[in-house]
Length: 108
Image 1 (cartoon, rainbow, N blue to C red):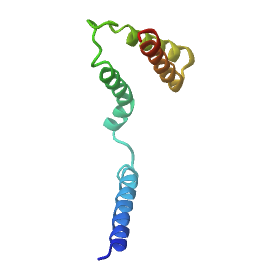
Image 2: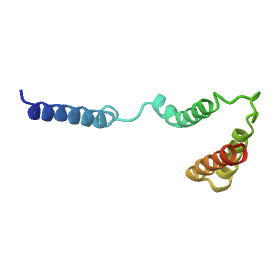
Image 3: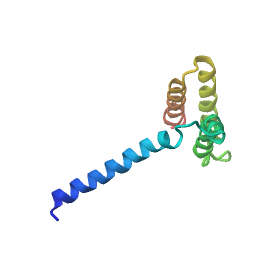
Image 4: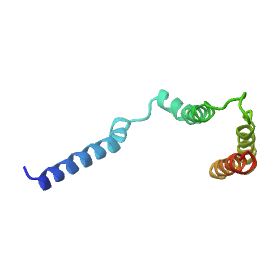
């Protein structure tokens, strides 16, 4: 088998699997979504965000030179911006810029 045919077969298989994975939930849940999935739909986003916060703060040392102050200020800014503007992207960008400013300019 030459490489062109092999490549086309690989692409066809990948496209078929991708389509199957995209269409499968609609086929399986055509009669309605079970209650556990509806519960997960409500709870999972908050759980994922909490996991990401823990992951981001895992290496913060309160005994280090900055004592975790830049991280605390950035988190506080994210919370304030989100409560004020209710815009996730704005909150994340402002917290990131604040944190980068603090560690690159103030603590450099």
